[in-house]
Amino acid sequence: MRAVPISLDLQVVAEIDRRLSTVSAEHAVRIPWAIESGSRAWGFPSPDSDFDCRFVFIRSRDHYVSLWPSRDVIETPLDSTFDVNGWDLAKTVRLIVKGNATAIEWLRSPIIYTGDADFRDGLLSLADAVVERSAIGRHYLHVAKQQRTGPATLKRFFYVLRPAAALRWLETHPADAVPPMDLQTLLAEGDVDGDVRDAASELITRKARTRELGGGTPPAVLERFVTTELERAERFETMAPANDPIRTRALADEYFRSQLG
Image (cartoon, rainbow, N blue to C red; front, side, top):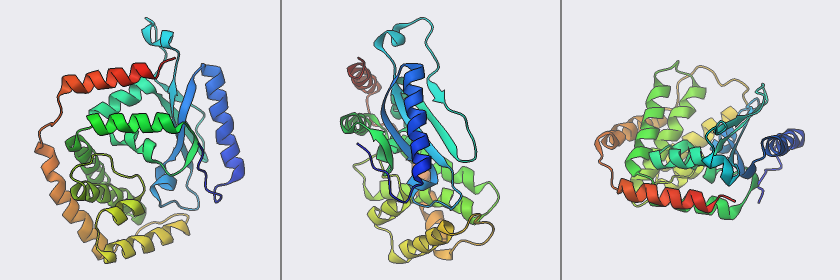
């Protein structure tokens, strides 16, 4: 499957496709999932945003029983336009089990360079079965807090607002642990007041036409929203795990082995 907006530069997309093909050939890996992460997939790109392609790769079964396994990360040259790298499936599964929201977000990206829908759905099903809501909540809470410690810019505020929106989504979906990836969907599905959504949309529009969205004060309604959601999310810090760790590891092992050729 492929889902690439027509707004993306065709030459850039072609270079990402080339890099993915080169990685597959040179490292003898299969790439069942390659997507865009970062601000473009989060729904608030700037005109000069780079391209953050992330992919999951799978090596041969023999590789995973070798005494000298290769690195579990593959990187391509980084420059001002391209940031293309990926994780081994084994690393991805372990991180999902630990509650790393980044690994899960890759499966919810609206921009897909190449992908096997069955692979995505299977890994999402595993995440639904094993992920601790408390771990996901802590992930987004800590990301927001860390971003708040840096210089206060409108650009940085987006990296606080999106985790806050994810925390709100978790609050309004008590049976789920895998939030959407993009900010506008999080707000739409998070039962957020209209004035919050309107203020966020206006700020997204400003960012889309400004190469460097620098200093300035975020709208008060968004500041209040962030503060409220982070305070409410403090409960995740002391929330006990709900899943049986033995069962979780067994499910993860079963899934991982099913993906090996």
